[in-house]
Image (tube, rainbow, N blue to C red; front, side, top):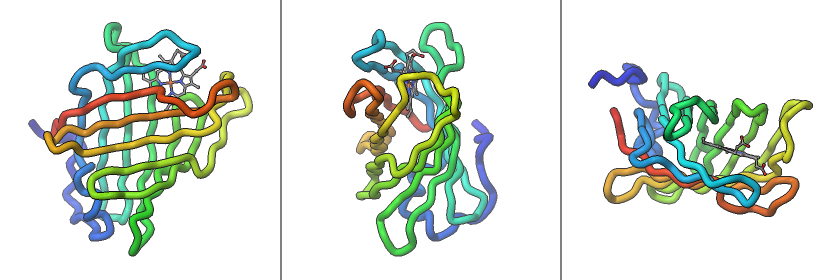
Length: 169
Ligand code: HEM
C-alpha cells in the first residue's frame, strides 16, 4: 500500500534514534479510555509521523469512537531532540483547545514524557487538565503502545488511555 505520508527527503541524522516512530500506525484493537469521572470507552486511532529532512518529526493523531466511527480527539505537533542527549520534546496542539509541551527521555525504543508547559483557550471546557504523562513503546512484537495519564482540577495523575497500534506503512 502506498504510504500517504512517505517522505522522499533524506532523514536528518538527528532523528536516527527515533526513526522507529516514522510512518503510519493504526490501532490494533480498540484502545481503552477511562477516568473516575467518565464512563469507560473504546476508541480507534491513527498516528502519522513524518519528516521533511529537518531535525524534527511532524505528527498527527486522529481518534474516533470505536462503534460510531465519529471523530473525537485530535492532536498534531512536532518532536524535537536535544542534540547530544536523550532529551525529547513534544510540541502539541489538541482540538480541545489545549496546547502543550511535553518533555522527557528516550530510552531504547521507549519515550517517557511529562508536561513541561500547558495553556488553553480562555473558554476551554472544565475540568481543566493540569498535567499529562505519556509513554510510547515499540514492543518486541513490532507493535507500538501508547499510555496517557492526566491530572485535572479534580483528580490527581491517573490513567486516561491505553492503546496498541500496528504499522500501516
Ligand atoms: C492527552 C490527550 C487527552 C487529554 C488531555 C484528554 C483530556 C480529557 C479530559 C480533561 C476529559 C474530561 C474528564 C472529566 O470530565 O473529569 C476527557 C474526557 C474524555 N476523553 Fe479525553 N483526553 C485526551 C485524549 C483522548 C483521546 C485520544 C480520546 C479518544 C477518543 C479521548 C476521549 C475522551 C472521552 C470519550 C471522554 C469522555 C467524554 C467527554 O467528556 O467528552 N480523550 N478527556
